[in-house]
Image (cartoon, rainbow, N blue to C red):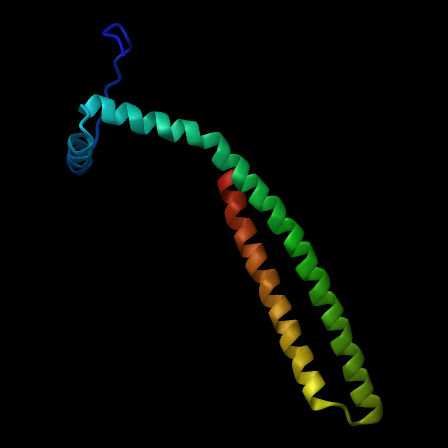
Length: 125
């Protein structure tokens, strides 16, 4: 940095100023060098973070589509089993219980993926 570089005046809270002073002292830097280092490291990481979040969003959309398909298939199996119970009266209780649990788990995955995707999209868009 040269003396001719532009000056930037910033207001910060007393607490932040004290934390920056402490961090600068521990790192053996001036306050100015500490602030510059922090700003540079932040701006260098912006693009990779956005790329990471976009990749994560795409993976979640893919996982969500799969979870929805699984939930639909399990729902169809449950409806078919319900019809068999209505038509014939008896069925395998354990198989029914397992199918209900699998359907609930699939629904929970769908809800979880949707929630995570909404959070990512708020950040990205």
